[in-house]
Length: 93
Image (cartoon, rainbow, N blue to C red; front, side):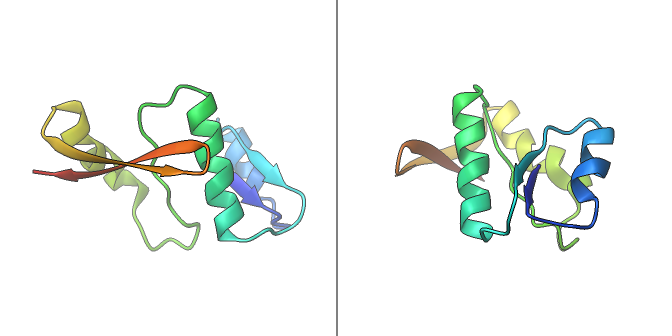
């Protein structure tokens, strides 16, 4: 979880729920938060990374459905390089 300088206790709640929290001491914006997430995933051997805003727009319970095409081998893949991190965009075929 990327805590981009929040002051509402979000990081504590996430930590207590078992999340790894990367904290920006001050708000750096969405771009910096995404960059931090990509860097963490790339340097920690992640196979996939799902990014959700904290605004409740997307239902986290749907993440397994999003990842299923990767797991069952039916996802198409396009690799994109952003700075030092390779980003894979996937879609179901």
